[in-house]
Length: 334
Ligand code: PBG
Image (tube, protein in one colour):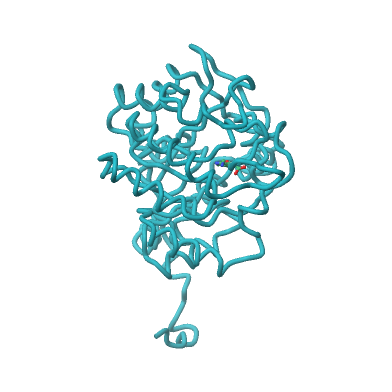
């Protein structure tokens, strides 16, 4: 139990802040490149870089350039790279069949990275939105997102990614029962070591706007995602989702978005003590970059402070678009 702090001057809390060495000695948390997962956007073609206006400094990359990016990230000590495809309009259909095409952009990139940069873990996203004509993560039947039919499609998508060599699958769709179904299918196909990081507590957030531009899903999205993603007003429900996903075979769990939901990160870590991750999403990145571009914030400092906050909140790691920049800074500062 915490005792009452002895009265001044016996206890001067400033003593332990007085020099960099003493501050270092009592620092409670640390941040390293190893804690980071770098989300990247893929585009078809060769030698192509496409800037994303709402995410300054982030580009869509063709597979050849993503392999180079993965090489650079591995050199910086970043643990994993997470792939998100920009899908051409003509490949979007109602049945989303491109999602489990063994040669779709994501699966090509997985194979190319695993062949050239075996040291970096490759993570994927499982959800139908990049391939869905209406921009939703699940099938839409008579205006409703149908759960079980969607899960069957997600299983095919996840298996194709595992087949291509993915190390970590990230179901981000928020359908019920998908973790168990994907886990069973992986076991059945002999992919025993493919890990699942469930987007367990994924909120129906307005902070995803720039991401939807990046993957080309914003134009087509009809309505909102409120019938499957979580209500930002809820906290207890996040714990129920994490408990359920762990019971179904998730190895790691995620809270998303990040900064506005640090209370959820802390509650998940305290309640379950499992590997817990946060996704510092596109809108969070865009907010910081916009303020930096105006000269209102110091970019490097705010970036590092925001990432350390996730560690303090109990996260084991962070999905962040800042990953290479932050890892470089950590390296330079020894
Ligand atoms: C797709 C998905 C989304 C993000 C990750 N996977 C968007 C959404 O649910 O609409 C958002 C990531 C970000 O904003 O950076 N299921």
